Length: 323
Image (cartoon, rainbow, N blue to C red; front, side, top):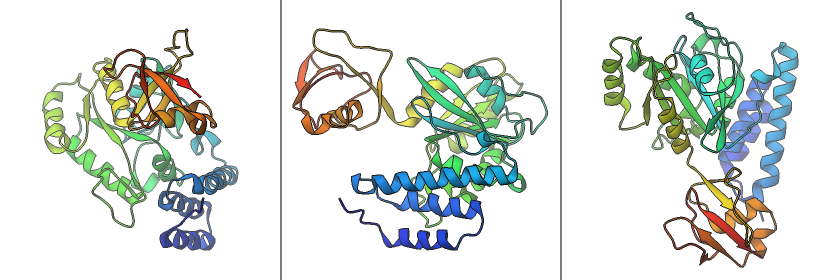
């Protein structure tokens, strides 16, 4: 299958060849990835570009003496979510409260210098969170923008005790400088990624937090999902986890063999809107072509109903594949 690359791709490729620094080269490669159409004809090229990005990231890390974990973090679990915010918003405490990680937590800013991953359990899956350094324009590391663009979603932590609307405005502007938009309508040529996002309005335990949360809801609640939490008191964290899962736009599908029960602890993770054929390919690359039909449990249907390959799956469906 031909790649059918658009003219903008070749312009980005020209920028890559002209780039001098690792940051410039990675930025150009990220742009090529963002522009490239997603289909089987580009799978090999997409993998090659990702490999180049990984090698450049490692080389730059060796030259700068930075920790490798600060730059190239492989995705694990059901999805990868980057946790961002301004200094002292409570990012690290929030990550510590919903994972088994132990990041440095203190009442003063800039306690996080590098990006560090941790796994957040949600029901029967694990979602990878990446705690990142605070967003300060003059201190943004070169590796952070591509990391935020590669993540499946962003979790923005806002301090309700410190002008939350101004924090949001600053974060949105800094993301735009990184060529990331939070609005699907923002289709400017400089934007490389429209990111999924959840806003965690943190420090619900402080006096006046309700007013700060109301301001966030009024200013952004109609555009972005918002969770009201206290990382310190662990208030609202389960609901926040659920909203993270919803923002990611993924579903869990379970498989079974005839006459046996499904393993409900090992779901296939698929994007919303995926079909039975997509699930078959996720089980084994040859199953998509060989699939005849499947029996389905879930989706409000009768147990064991026969469905065809174009059937759209729902979260929690159980499928029995027949090839």
